[in-house]
Length: 205
Image (cartoon, rainbow, N blue to C red):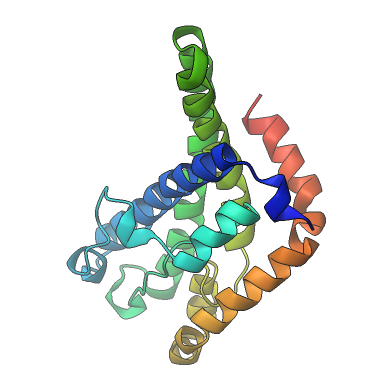
């Protein structure tokens, strides 16, 4: 995959900003839901914020720019503090990813409206960023739906067997590096491209 030669500076910038938008939406939604369900740690750790930087994972940012599928910095959630306990974890998993999916079609009329107002370089930059955020959002959901360390899907592991979480959290960084290698081969993108293309047609057109 000759991804470095294929990327222009404008693509790098739009993907960078698009990634910040996606992790802000997802991170704030997950932290907000965790707080609503009774776990105050997310708020105390500074994750209940509209500043995207606390949600950024450096490996996830690299993945977004180079490959598009990405992830945010993991947010530890205490299942014993949640209303609904382990079932609450499943609700948080589904709802926080659903919020990202919901943002994708919402951005489409915004993109269309702005295309009638902007011209020249401003139009290219702004519309490209919105398009990148939508596509990155779809890839983000597809990757983070997987129940793996370092991803939002690890909430499913915690819901299934909470005592496994110390080991899962120790594996987060190695798992992220492995994700980068797998994404670099294009295997994940090839496997999930049909589903991603279907979501693009459904939610972006």
